[in-house]
Image (tube, rainbow, N blue to C red):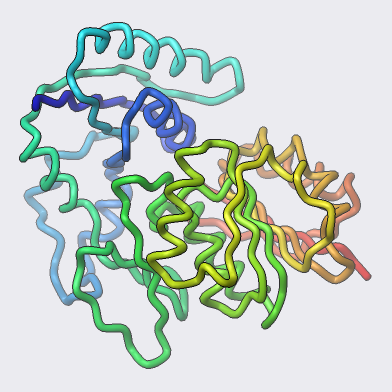
Length: 315
C-alpha cells in the first residue's frame, strides 16, 4: 500500500489545532518536528545515556514547526488535502497564528511509514517521579520513578510537549492522595494516567472526539489504571454534576474561556484548577477570566513559550 506524508509548516501555538485537523482527516497519529525541542535535548544525555544525533538537525525547520501525518492514498486524497488546507487557514479566525501554513505531500511506502516515525519517540523524564515511555521501548524505572507507557501512533499527545509537561508537574505538586480529578480534553489520556499513578482516587477523562476517547481508553488499559480512570465522550464539562478536588485542562486558551465558570462551580472549596495549552501572549486573558469566575491564582509556570496557570477555589 502507498501512503502520503502530509507535512504542515506552522507555529508552536497552532500545533494542537493542526494535529486535530489531521486526525479528523483520517490520520492515526502525528509527528512534530520542532527545532527548539531538538536544541533543548541534543546537548544532554537522555534516559538511556544516549546522545542525540546532531546530524538530524538538518531535518528540522529553521523556524516554526513541522506537523506530519500519514494518509492512505485514495481517489479522494486531493479533496482531503484541499479540506486540510482550508481548515488550517480557518484557524486564523480563532485568533491563532499559523505561520507559513503550507501543506506539502510526499509519497512513502507502508514499511517505511510503519517504522521510521518511531525514531522520534524516546523515554523522557518529565517530573520528579514520572517518565513517559513509548510502549515498544525496554525501560527499567528507578525505585522512586513511575512510568507512563504510551502508544503515540494513536495519541493526541505524547506527554513530552511543554504544555503537557507543565500540567503533569502541576498535578504532581497539587494532587493529594485520594483526590478526584477531571481531565478536560484528555486526548491520549496522559494527564489522567499521570493523576492515577500519583494517587488520585477517581479520574474522569473527557473528550469530544471519539478517536481521542478510543486512544485514551487503550492507554489507560495499557497502564493498568482502568479501575481509577473512567474515559467518557463529552463536550467540555457538560456531563459532570458532582464537584471534585482537581480539574486539569490542556487545551487552547480560547476553549478554556468557554468553561472557566463551570470549572469554578465544579471545583470543591480548597480545590484547584490547572489550565495549560496557553501561549504566553494569552496568559493574562485566561488569568483574568479565572479571577472573574472566583478563583485565586496561586502559581503561573512557564516552559518555552507556553504557560500553565494554577488557580484555587478558596474555602
